[in-house]
Structure formats: structure tokens, C-alpha cells
Image 1 (cartoon, helix red, strand yellow):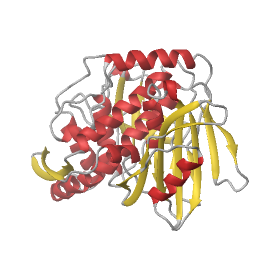
Image 2 (cartoon, one colour):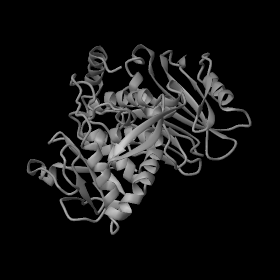
Image 3 (cartoon, one colour):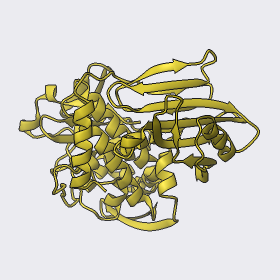
Length: 390
């Protein structure tokens, strides 16, 4: 999906609108209705009602608007969304699909506001944590450039999460519904381990990578580029965790008997080393086209596709986090490298996150070394930062 032609078009648009300074956007969190939105940097709150049930966010540099509204309704999601679309004058029909084990609705509306300007975008409706209440989202841009803003709009909406448990994105699940389990066999520490992925997982995850990388490229020379990097990996991790957290259970269960013998004093470190040694055997792969992301979707790694340092490091961190072993992604744009980091106490090189007051044992995924062993040419800790994924 990330073709040269697409990037030429998207780059021209971003140069036109992103020459100024962008605002930093914290994730939007509503504890009452249990939803959050991890939107791209640059949105600012532009309107709200007294009851805070309706919010509008406009982007500082792109002509994109996000409208958020809570409806109290006895009807279903598709009826709620249809009502919302009618209020802005859209005659487009909504369709229903399943997300987060709930019936949701989606539409791709176009409408004309009172000033005569035409707009187009995407609209969604989903049940909230509170029964009888629905969240509707409408993200749109001027119709003449709405297709060029399409990835940015989808990234905004796809960041929606309802509840505390990580789920795949709402746009992703609409585009790539579940197709059924596919058995996968892994070999870790000499053990053959049976696990599974959904048949749609690899393609769906690649869809997310493509969307988020397109957004990330906007921030290459931006003061908040580090925040954009963090968001990029957070959203990739969220998608992967929802698909693969059960894989950690399968791996740990298979390795535990031998870990009790090999690493009786530190089972966590034994498990972490088994994972690190495993990913170090993967085939190395980087994108041939520089405009494409080097990130290999994690479900694709499990089915045998080659990978680079950041996808391997995220996989290790995910599998550790899924077993309640706090782990992060360590990133160095200066070194064009990534590692896994874990709070497991053990000798070796560590990275201290001064902002969070945490220390992480560093794990190199592209050389056959143990935790805490890193190359001398990557030892300058000032060029690294930690991305909390969980």
C-alpha cells in the first residue's frame, strides 16, 4: 500500500501545511465513558459543550477536524450514527460491523456546511463502557483534499480504545475482519511450541504499519518528532499485543519446566534470555524502498518473514509484558537502531530513563549476545530513549 506515488502525493500535501509549529497532543481520556484517543500531534481543542459530551478538535496545520460526541440512546450503533450524519447534512448510509466484541457502525460521509464548503471523511459509532451510551466520531477534511488526508484521518480514528484491555483498531477490524485461526509452530530453546494467529493478522497489521508510517513521515524535521516516534510504536504495539498476547502464554508454558532447571533463581531472566536468543536467529530484512517502513508486522515474523531490530525488540518486549515482566522499546534514531529493555534485575548494560526514574537492562536482538551486552559503538546512552508500550 505504501507506494512511491502515494508518498509523493502525501509529501507534497504535508510540505504545504506543515511548515509551521505543531502543538503537542496528549491522549484524550474519558474515564466516565471509558474511551481514549491517542491522536497525532498537532490537534487542539476548538469547541466543547458545557456537559463535555460534545468536543471538537482542529489541527494546527492540516485542515482536518475531529468531532467527538456522546449519545444517550436506546437504539443501536448504526441508528445512532445515521442520526449523527443527518445532523451534518450527510445522506450517506452507515454500515455495521463488529469491533471489541460489540456491534459498531461506520460510514464514509460527504456533506456541505452552512458556509457552502464541502467536506468528506470517515465516521464511526461504538457503544461506550456505560450501557445505553454511544460514542460517535467524525473526522473530516475539505472534500478536494480529503483523499490525500485519508491516512491521517484513519490514524486518528484507529487510535480509539474503549476499556482498559488493548484491542485492535476499529478501522483495522472493519477493513480486516477475523478469518479464523491458523496454527503456527515455533522453535525456541530447542522446544517445538504450538501456537496460533488469525489468518488476517499479518495483512491487518501491515495495514496499521502503513497508515502509521505515513503519519510519522510528517514529523521528520519537527520539534516533537520524538513524540511522533513514540506514538508510532505505541499504536503498532497496541495492534500487535491484541493479536499476540496469547502467544506468550503458549511459549512460557512450554519453556517453564526447563526454566525451573536452568534458571531456578531467576525464572524471568531465563525466560527473557530464551526469547532474546530466539529472535537473534531470525532472518534479517530491511525495506528496499527508503520511503517504506522497515518494521515487519509481528504476526508476519511468527510465520517466517524476515525482520529488523525494532520489530524484533518490540516482539520481545510484548512477550515479556504479557507475562507481567515490565519491558520497553529502546530507540536511537541517531544510531538507526532499536533494542528491547526490561526491568529485570541482572548484571550488564542498562539504560536509565530519568523522566520515569526507571532502569532497563538492554537487550540486543541482532547479535548473539546475552542481556546487558551491547556493542561499543552503540554505548552512548544520550542517543537513546525509552518508549513505554504497555
